[in-house]
Length: 229
Image: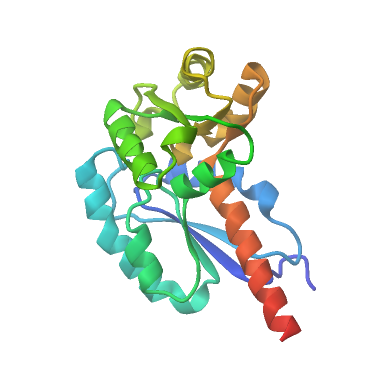
């Protein structure tokens, strides 16, 4: 197999129009690309807002995401919806025959394997409300420490003080809320994961990586099933 060939394709959808977020995700996923494994393509929904920050943004993202999944269904073995509100996750799953992963749901699932209580570093106070509701909907309340906002919008995450602010919120979640594993509550936080984990001494999960890992496993399992049948 040639070095640039891949067995399968995973499409990671950034529902906002920020190419900086897409590039951050793409870099964070680079370590998950390997010869013979599925290709991982990150795409930007250029018609979306700069950041998915309100319920209105979440609702508005559903139709474009589902249309994209429908249009690309024949060329993908799995999709990842790379917004921590998981917009359009259920309807997208209903219109395609391949698995669709939401990064929040995937991060929650991964966190359960790393600790007893997970905390989420959120971007804004409105994000905390959505996350609390989502955790309850998924029945994970007993394993949930809290979400806490860093007070930065998606487009502000590239600022020089971001790392320190994320670390401060993460420390509070660990020391006062009892979290023993942390989740970065936005795909644009990826480059800070390793430093926060090293500084705070607890596992830190990047949600796009969590979803991509699960997508890779699903694609490889499907391929193995086809080969053995």
